[in-house]
Image 1 (cartoon, rainbow, N blue to C red):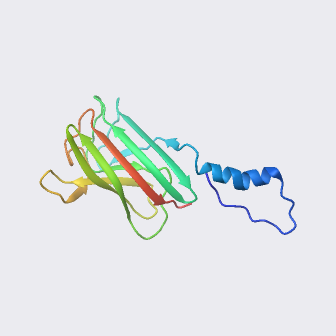
Image 2 (tube, rainbow, N blue to C red):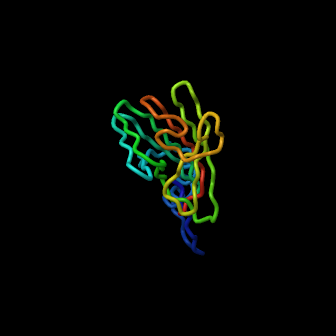
Image 3 (cartoon, rainbow, N blue to C red):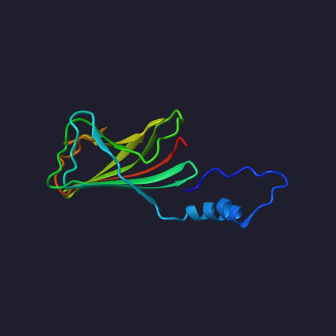
Length: 166
């Protein structure tokens, strides 16, 4: 992962190891594999339970820019809890005084729902929003029955790009 470059001192003798760390390693980190992490799935009411479903995340951080992907696949023993859903981020968002909107998608049976994720300032979680119903296109917080009643095999995918706090 990239990090803040060092401050050089006048007259400093630069070694190969220092050059490798400051230039080569920084450059290579921008082309490295993404880092895996396990997001935490929460709800504003009763907590959902993943059961035999899968929840995975991965991200790439270059400087303070984070690109992340979260995928939830519901299993036959997944329970959906109550209330509105949130998912933890790999790094907190910056205190930029603005909300960011990124992409979300729910694959529910033969339906594919396009949605958005909202990231607030200083946030550690993101929340997916989808159309309330097939006939109501206003966005609503995703929950166990919004935009569709969740079931085994359904998939939630979220792709995020944001400024990290540090």
